[in-house]
Image 1 (cartoon, rainbow, N blue to C red):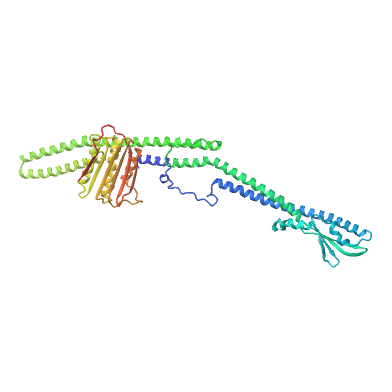
Image 2 (cartoon, helix red, strand yellow):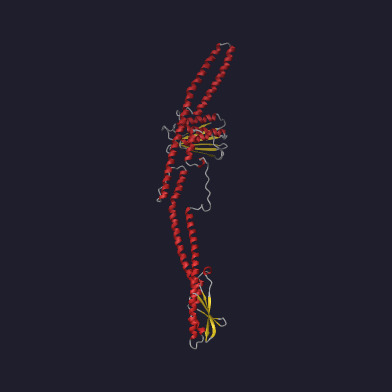
Length: 498
């Protein structure tokens, strides 16, 4: 792996790209039904559940206490009513010449609470019902049957005989009645339930508002983490008023600053690595041109001199020497062609000496000369003569690699190259589109595309490779660049190799 590739991997790891991480793409965490709800909803649901449990426990306690109170109140009222009725019956029966005491009883024993009084004659027929019983029935009508069933206790009753002149004329049946007490308990519990519901609603509304304000920094933190994931390390969070959340925001801002510094260091390192590689290539190309070229030229000159000398030798020997000289000349031609190909591959010698557009046009013409039946067009707009070695050779290599892939792997018949410089934005946009077979979405990148990615990334640029319409491949490259000389080409030029 080249140093630039290694540095690119480090930069990708710092930017938090899941696809570039050692562990591969991260999978979203799987949450259960409860975890899928927001923290605010979970807290409110927990408060509601606690209040419901407390309310259920309170109902159980209220009912248990109500049963005990009802039973005690009913027994007490039954004893009081029994004594009162007994005294009333005795008083009416002891009156001199008393008759019809049975019929007068309702007038004297009405209005007793928590008891039900029934006056019967000797045959067991009810003569009258005390007026208080109507009120008791009215209380029963306002209390739900289920609550009455829960609070009701087993009733007790007693019989008080009515005697006139020594003869039994009837009886008074006094039974405990809990309806009044149950109605009172129901009213108290209803009022308490309304108050508790109002208080709980107020608490839930307050919690909803407070939690929304407290959790707002967490949502801001989540948005900030998305910004970091996207590589925007300049994003900073405002300091919340909650101390704990303020500490988290401070650590987030410190993390963003550290990541930005690391990315800037990696960018400088990558740019330096590319610059060193270009310097090495330029030095090698210079050595090949300055050292190997003169040596080949000298060998060719000596061969030509030997060839002239063969004319003075015997015919048979001269013929044999001529054959050897022709073979050696052919080898020198091959060495010279190989040297030129190496120079073009390592570093085009024209870069930095002639305008960039002319160098690229020469590259396109060379491709067409070696690819009969293929049409390659080059369009440039606003292009300066040069942008520095790193940018110039990056553009050259991108075009060289893209066209090579289109011809060799895509079997393209037409290739369109567009190069546009935007001086205001300080950017060069390069587009290479062909009509070949295209590239599969899951196809791995070869060393050529990897080299393009390294160079573009080292210069702080971006690139993408997508399928063209209706067929073929489209490569888009954007590189930050500023001309090293202010002389732009006089007008947009369109060079097409026919």
